[in-house]
Image (cartoon, rainbow over all chains, first blue to last red; front, top):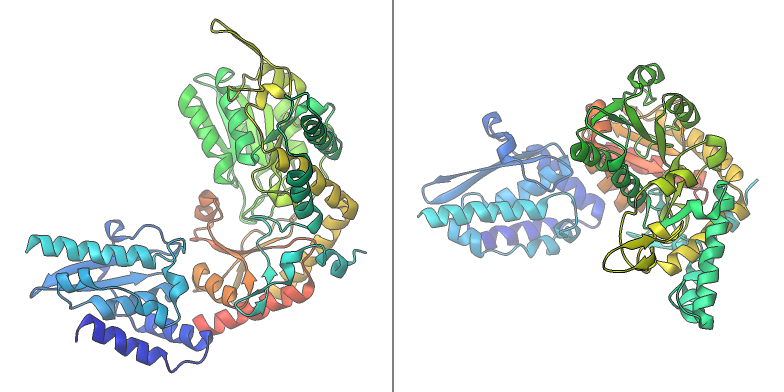
Length: 139
Length: 404
């Protein structure tokens, strides 16, 4: 599936929820199901700065696509990461670079995209794009 | 007995809703809300007497100057300073600390020591570290125990004649501990050290008497005590302020300027270079008058009631970890839920209209000492109620249910 198709699928899932509580509970549940990053990648080098919680992000290239794994010690942040990984992991670097993240607004989590918010979602997206840029340049 | 409903009606912001819920404002240790008299006084200044101070002979300049100096006298009486010129207007506590730490460069040399405590805000650590870097002095740290109280026996052991200045907070922002500053001042004076008290958290909650404390310096911020942001006070004993060099050069702080030599103005102007936050300085006096109309002793008693109520209610929640359980405590509840990140809890309770702070509260060494990434901090003011604490408890329980 393309990034856009995955985003539309997520928008569809979130449209079932009536209020913030259900939306947040879903994000929390996603956080609980996020596959763990391998312990060897939970290094200080992989920590994303600018978060109140700690966030680790690891990327590697497989068959021309970028595979992301990540973790956080805060569950809401982990849920947001799970959404981003679902959108971006397994995509080609160029597609990642060209993608927007407007869907976050449509699923009622726009407040988490504010640059002043200390959850690091913005920093994380930036870092995902940085990896994509690096892999793109390498190819 | 305070009429809390009447007091709440003085604060227009408290009637707001946040995320569709009535606002519960429990981030008072970060900044207090402002009563209508303060908001009106700012507007009145700009509408009626705005002019630069201490300069013009025209009527408006005179009115503005008078109002500014009246405010200085109000604050002098409020903290019981001996002289009005010992009361300096600053931009806030941080400014006051930097002014003194900078000036102490000439009183501190390699081999000397500067002392702070383990529960300081970063702004009462970093300026002193910078002083140590400039001079080659060492930084000594008064440790705290597991309740978040300073270990006074260790303090006495660390104290000797090499210590030139001790800087501690009156109340800890992260833990709420009320420190025995009078004891610290007396002991430090006995070895010839000066004492700086960071009163940022104390000034909204306690009545302060700088002469009774015998503090050499006492600093606080206006915005935490119902006044405007960007205002603050540095009290310094006259003898110290005369000895300290000026912090910033500019207009207002001079007596005479030639290209060969400049002589400095008398106190307090020597430390008030440039056009100050005139409206803020004047209105800080209004805020102090407002607090005194309620009475700081009444405020302290009521806030203590809120603290006891909140502590009891919070303790009933399973898995709660209170951080900072000092015997002498101001109305700050710092806590965590077992196995849950404070950031998650803060986000959920915000969705329920409750403003708390999460994180390290600019006191990373405190968090490191307790081996935690941060806390959720609810800090109460005299306009808060027990019903609001009930709302917090319900929200924390809900967060625990959702996140657990």
